[in-house]
Length: 381
Image (tube, rainbow, N blue to C red; front, side, top):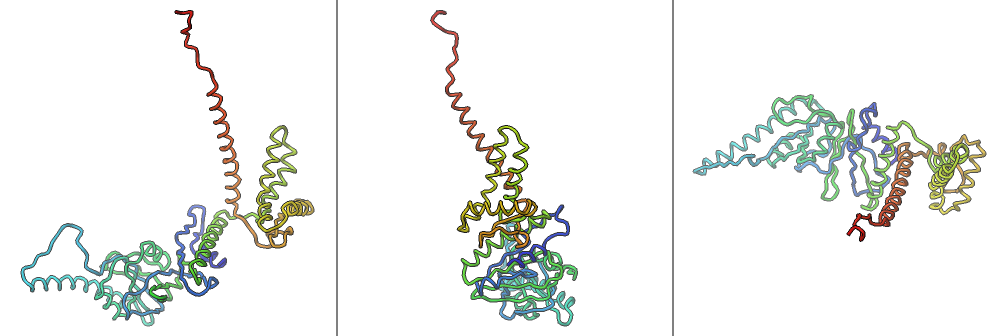
């Protein structure tokens, strides 16, 4: 999934991340319980968790015009308190016919628009946020239009970013510039669930990571790893820098504090510098302990290897063999902002804990103070 995660971030990343940060909400993470976890992939488009609602609608389309709209194609209740009354059955039939004619006219406008924009070998897909009644679906199916109704709002926003075009709120004055484009649209059925793949978009600003696995437990594990990976890649791009991992940064910082800063410090502050340096070594020590290695031997090997290099190379711990290694050669990196935040929070939290002790000590001292004399002794009576 490493390449898929990087491709997803590069798809949505703006040219300059200084003014406009990367929005991870533009990446849809879709889970499909099928195949194996290694079949998870990056989709250059969107995957919707619903499909067409008519059996005669096409399942696979190529060279598709994408129409994203928020227009109703079914009877709706009025927004104000109102009523329709009729005296005879004929009047009721006329009322029903007028309502049906209103919907048929909307469907006809979409069909005429499709015939106007679609050339030979091109298809038409309509994704609607509101409902479409069965009779309207039948009209669209006869015309070869794939219709998805009641799409989620977040998918509607991502669709225009992935395929282009703009949301349509009225079927009046439809224009080709309002349509998006996708080279392929297909529908996949898994049991009772349907998924619609909108793939191979031209200039997508939104995409999908399709996670597949034999069971929900495997998919959940992959999903957690993917979310962590997305944030890590996002941080690396926005920082435009990384630091060596595998405990190399903490080891280098601790050695610098001991060898340089501590020697230049005088008084009791020198003890604080040495304690801070020891605290930084917690990270490589934890790596060694979790790998089943001897903690002291591992740290001593790292220190000796760094001294042998003259302190110019970043040395980390190989958790497999327990030997020192160069993280840059192995491609092991950490985020700059993560390390910066760890150092900042460790200092702030330590100060807060010490402040709690000071407050408790001050409270005890105030409780021991004798009551003040009010000047009303026996001699004044």
